[in-house]
Structures are given as C-alpha cells and as structure tokens.
Length: 340
Image 1 (tube, rainbow, N blue to C red):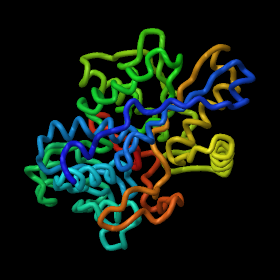
Image 2: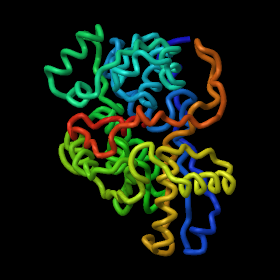
Image 3: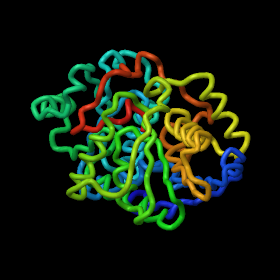
C-alpha cells in the first residue's frame, strides 16, 4: 500500500508518568512524551520534521544527507518506500563506498534509497551552492527536492510546533536531546506562556543556540518561546559514551521498562536527573522528557529486506563518527553527527 495514509501517525503521542524517586523525593513529577511511538518507521521527531517536507516536495524525488548511522536517512528511505517516491542519500565518507554496508545503510538500501558517498571535505561544504550543485549532479539528483541534513528547515520547525501544542498545560519544563535544533525550535514555539523548553545537546561545540535561533527566524521571523540549552551532558561528543552513561541507561530501563536509545535519549535522561539532583527545578515542577527515538535495530514491519534483525544496539564504527570538534554550518544545521 502506498499513499499518504501509510504515514498516518499516532497523535498526540502518549504521555506517560513514571514514578522515579530521584524526582519524587524532591517534589518533582517526571513524564515521558512517547514520540518514539508515533509511527513504526518514521519515529518521533523524524515524523514531525519529515512529513512537512514531503508535503512541500509534492511527489518529487527526494535527496538528503547524513552520516553512516543517520536516523534521518533511514526515515527518509522508509518514507520513500511507503509513498513510492525515489530517494537518494548523500553519505558522508567516500571511504565507506568500498566497504560492506552497515545495518543502518543496509536498511536504507533495502527501502530503495540510492546511496551516494562523498568525501568529508566536500560534505562539509555542501551548503555552498556550487558544491551542492556538484554533489547533486554527481548523484543524478539535480531535479530532486532537497531535504536538509537532519530534516531541519523552516518546514520542519513549523511541523515540530505541534509537539509543543500537545504539551500545553501538561508540564512546566519540556526537555529533549538536541542535534540540529530543529525540534527544539518548533517545540518552544508551540508551548504556552509560562512553559519552557530545555535542550540537552549531544554534540559539543557551542553552536546550537545560534542554529536554533536561526531556524526560528526562518520559520517564524524571530526568536520565539522560552528555551535554553545545557551543554554539559554530551559525554565527549556525538556517539561518545562512558561506562557511567551505559550503567545509567540500563538502570533506567530496569526501573521503567522503557528502551533507552543511547546516542540521544540516554543523555537527555541523564541530564535531567543530574539537574534534579542539583536542585535546578523548584519543588512542584512537572518535567516532560521527550523520547525522540528508540534503539536501532528495532522490531519493525518487514520491508524488502525482511524484519529487523534484533533489538540489539548498533555501535557506530569510530571511523564513521565525525571529529567532535567539527562545528556544523549554522545554515545547514547537520544531522547531529549523524544519527538523529
């Protein structure tokens, strides 16, 4: 089956209260906004960001960008298969072209996405018109609709505003992990007066405030809503982790029977627990944590390549994780280096 109906989401996504003594003993409530349950293939913020771009494309072929473990590439490929729309993924890392596809890229290929690998230097300059035109020519995608890396553009930000609207009156603070700033930009715009959004960046570099503000200006004409960032919980950068974070994630799973995605969601949850312990939230505060994704691979409807292999967590090859010091182009707003 193809057509718009196959993208029908479960909205509003469930809001689940969890009893966690690290919050309750401080007079705090913790809610989980289960955006990971929106759609079996377009998970969480991927559905909210990608669907508005699909509407803008009006059935044209899609081309987008990402790293070797990009959630965004997988979501775009899945949407293309469901809608019978051709997709091309421009993948950072020419050296990957001669290697077997990892499970993430294999999923993209199974969903019909053509993969075009480019060297990392060219990839860094893809927002420049001449470089972008050269990439599109080489990929045979000159007539395709270009979806930015991570899906973050004005259309996506306006789509994410609905996330904030769903949480009006439900929480005082809404927290989420951030890679590109697009979801945060829309979320903050959708919240009611008196609510605030808190972003936990998963990259280091200090670029995200400017990127988020630029996205809000593109979508709404000005900085909008009450939002802030706390960049202390990136654990060394994108796809970096520590035994402490892994232990925390496993403990949270045992406590609440919620699968914790490691590259984003674990850092978000760790961050808000740490902030609670620091006394950053006044007694009586209700905190909603947006669960934007789930571990990959996951059990999902069988596609051309059959069902997902397992619920094991895929760990990116270190060669496929970017330099943690590499600051993204604020105009391009990348795919959180590269898995959001």
